[in-house]
Length: 478
Image (cartoon, rainbow, N blue to C red; front, side):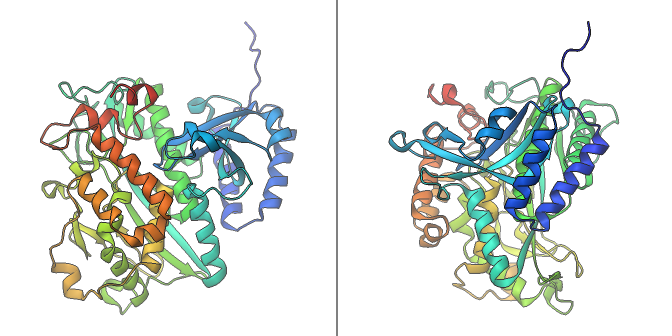
């Protein structure tokens, strides 16, 4: 039978060129008006596109997508609305309608064999009923903060993450999880070890191909320490774009796994007794093209400015721990038996330190926050880290010796992390009191649906009520 559809399908090498060009426009700060004109013209002229996926993240970082028919979007792109009361942590029913403005700079082409033909994707900025930035949209807050810092100081925030995950047998294995059975890894291999054609390696290869096409600028990929664990690394970029790429990385991984009849999971510690997953977050700041974190003569090659940045994060470590480790399951990962970065100190070599100082030069000097879990809201996390590093309270000027040797630990359970955030005035000023209260409320609700004692067995509640796993049906079964 003749093929009736003629939706857009572009070879990977051509998609990569298009997406790298779009990425360059973002990084060059092409004006919103110019970007809007450019992409609207493209959508009008490209007849093979059927829909535009507009996406956003909620307060907890869960990814949401709305597919708009292209013809409708071209007529209504400046008046898109959605029901905010249906999104956990957003508005209440009495004031439910929210607006969705398109951030045209984030326009990307999707690999059709992964996502289906005829679609492109763009990130949204959430507005309230009056068209003002919505106070709980951390993508918008991060974008606004970065723009203000660039205009005021010329700062550009560079971020790269090392996001780990697991590949499990079966579709939707998280939603179907039973503690008596646990997860079934697709591979028994270890660090760097996986046969070229086993399921884990095939998955990694397909994910690497897709993210290369999406303009990630890949660096390396490999199986991680635990069985069926993976990590794909890519080049650093602007903070907002880096957070967008975290969401696309996880979305693409989950879709490729599903296409293989498997589940890609970003739970921090889905299996007890083996290494968990982290999202080590590497950060530096440039000013007029110069990396101001670097000082050849400074301690570990870092400038005094960079050490102040580190000390402010260490001073507020307990206050922001819940942002960096936002789930019951995340506190299993902060276990000292598995190289857990749970000590509130910095080091160039000790991987149990919250902050590591990688070996670097004038271009690559950076700080690596190792405490970050892969299930965070990346926008809230990057916003919290850069603002804390620049503006956090310097309650203590930490000495070189104290940075390396003192023994202070992050909370080992979510209840302590909630308590520490609740009593923190700094987090109230950082997130805003309403967001702080709403975030704590969501975390407490999930914690109360899970056993209080973690124990040695991963419990059903901590998985199915996890913010990236649960849905209205599962949540209502409590």
